[in-house]
Image 1 (cartoon, one colour):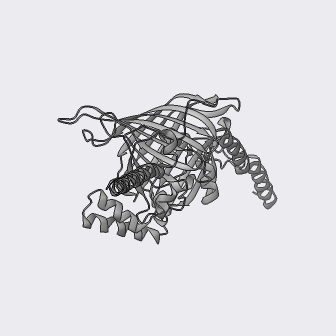
Image 2: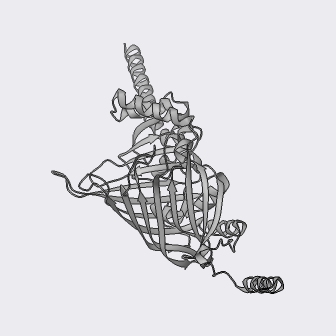
Length: 413
């Protein structure tokens, strides 16, 4: 073959190869930039949060434990009503029967009237009790010591209340997504074609570390002593919290957001940076509610893979606890029949940590049994004063009577 023919054949081969296309890459393998920016996500969720500042929700929860037959909660029915920063949260928790003890249902309520926070217990057969915080004593360590009760439906739906009682002052319902985008570091934004979701991966400071930094260690030890914990248990717990205060522990959060449903969180996975699961939350069966057409799930599942969520200790491959949440009803109309001030009537045990008397007390609280009316509950420590004045008045009357008798006898001589 001549050199000219070789060159010709080589050129024809190159021309042919240049026209051949490589096999197509599967759609699932292509890097897909998100069609919606996080700015759009933020704007939509901010409108949803605004609409949820006035909402009335009823829900039920079924709880499954990996270790059954223990005296732990098996179910809950809840009702939460929010009205522009005010809150009423009522929940009944069901516990299994034990030898010598029937099936137990405990009623607890938590309210905030814009100034004072109330935590009440009024179970059948027990003494009703109410603890008050904030009010005229907003800087009390007790308010930073105590957590707001977790609303499991809101958690499943991707929303939450202020984490600690002290944060209710100026606080309100927030979006988990907005909180994490603001507080954390966004590592990656991708598209899950299988679910049409945007997947946002964020690194946040572990909430347990933030809780430790606002915990009063002396008060923690005092309360553990009141609950009959041993000295060793108290020292261990206080030591753990002290170490957490200086920890730089982080948490990874992966959020699956559905743009077609108002960027609702359809799935959320929280884990340690080395991949140990903490929570997996899924929400399903979304519907639109109210005049603002807010997307909310009718069902949700919360799986917890650690037995001690405070310290993220005791990791397991299977969930230690599974909460199955179901939405019963949601309304956006104002309620005139709900009070944000708890009142269980005479005989209620009051632990006042909200009044001026509590603020000036060495212990930071005043405890007594409520004998009076609803109006007296607004300033619970004040109900002690009628008893004090009653005693003073009676002493004065007795003195006047004795002096009068003495003077009468002197004059009658």
